[in-house]
Each structure stands twice: as structure tokens, then as C-alpha cells.
Image 1: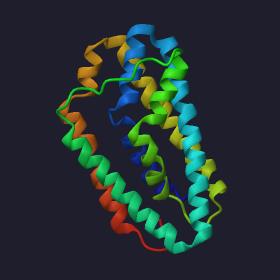
Image 2: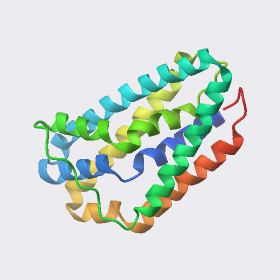
Image 3: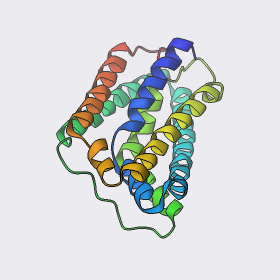
Length: 206
């Protein structure tokens, strides 16, 4: 991955993981109720989910590339469209209160992992986001040496900060993170990225 492409990917992933949602609510709640150190167990669970989804996304993209360049091209178009959808949905939900979490699965880790896995943004978003930055003419596992550390580092930083906010600000952190204007700004960022990536797509390019 060229340095310029890495910068674009890192900026995009930063926007992707700071989007307020169930994972953010859970991290803030963990920080409030458990304290910062114990709250990091929830961050570890999110990183487990992120690692799994990145590997599954890589396998899926590899299958598409091996099937046909056309299939990969259309996957990139669908992915860009999904990013726009996430942004539009974020705009529509910007004034709504923070999402309610399902009842605990038992352990801190198990509860956080369950929330991360069923998070609608994660289910489709990883494959959609991932497909935009993979170069079909370069072995995908060579690219993963750049993509995975970047994505996981930014994910860890984002949710560690949410946990710290919960520990430091208590319930006020929910109001800060789920501020209408902040949510609108992140949503517009996703829409802009979706449009830019979609219009830049051409067969054999990222």
C-alpha cells in the first residue's frame, strides 16, 4: 500500500470507528460502572471481533478477486453505496438518544463481544470499508500487514478513549459523544468518503 493510500485508509478508518453506536455506549457504560482498567476488558472484546471480521473480509475479498475482476469491481461499488447508507442513516438518527444495549451476557468480555458482533455497522461495514482499499493486483495477505495493524490500532485508540470518557465524565460522556452536531459531522464524513471512493472506482484500481 502506497503511503498516500495508507493515509486515506487511516483517515477513513478513524471516522469509521469513532461513529457513535452500541460499542461506544458499552465502553462508556463500562468506564462509568467498572472503572477504566476493568473497562478495557470490553475494548479487548471489540478488538477480538475486529480481528475476526478483518480476516473474514480478507477471505471474502480474496474469493471475489479469484472469481472475477468484475465481481470485485461491483463489490467495491456496493461497498461505497453501503458507506453512503451508513452516513445517511447516521444523519437521520443524529437527534435520537443513544441506543439501548441488550441485557448483559454475563461477563464483561462476553457482553462486549456480543454487542460488537451484532452491531449493524460492523456486520456489513467491515467488508464494505475493506473492499475500497484492497489492491487486486497485490497478494491480499501482503496488504494485511499494513491494513490490520492500522485498523486495530485505531480501533483500540477509539474505544479506549470512549472508556476513559465514561470513567472520567460519567453520564455526561454520553451527551458529549452523542451530541447531535458531532453525530452529523461523522455521518457527513462517511457520506463524503462513500461518494469519493465510489466515483474513484475503476476496474483494477482502488
